[in-house]
Length: 342
Image (cartoon, rainbow, N blue to C red; front, side, top):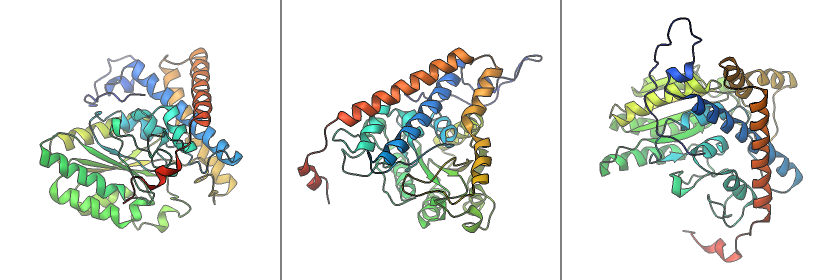
């Protein structure tokens, strides 16, 4: 799925007496809203398929992204293709929205030679593709934040108008890389957006045991940068906030810290279970962004049972094709193990 260049997301007034179509107020067409929904649906199917493959022993590890789809996909739509993006291990929806195909993602999961992230040399979760400016990342959480800030500095020195973005979780916000990167970006007023997906559990540590403040966005005041906390299950509000932050950064008004409040609907990875009680997990399902956005689209007459079934079938076929394609793809040659090693 290609990411369109963003226009302004400033709200436009809806004429009196008409239902408030928020997506149109924020500059998204009806087809844009449906594309966004399909990407969320396809990403969920990818996440579910990878988890099954990991449990079957077909791939080494799966990192579910269930519950994070709206925040990642909507924010990605606010970027230009030329903007450098640094993802993190739970970023399958963002990678898909940026332009990695389902086949690309499954090639990486299977560790195949044509996997775009590392050609089969690295574990899944290091989502990258040079052709679409998805930058290579480390398995150590939050290390991509200083790299994104460095890209923003490089863009300024080159006279480019790109905006760098780093995605990370609340656990990453507890690392020194977060504070060092944000401080450097603030001091030099660099064009970078730090996008934290706060599911409040990291791997298993509740956010209140990581932080003395209520939200990651509250930390922005200590660095004199814009800090925004947004409902990460609402793709339209995420899009609006991200557009405003990116527009400001591109105009030279400095960095921003965005916190998308999301709910992780399942376990951390296929190898690490969930410490939450069954009742907590059941409550988490109430915050699933996919049925929520589906209801919005139905309310505005954009989605009905026929189109929903069509989207579901299309996503299942797309993912099944990707699994079959990647499973049959060639493994990397043994000699590659000694290439690109420094």
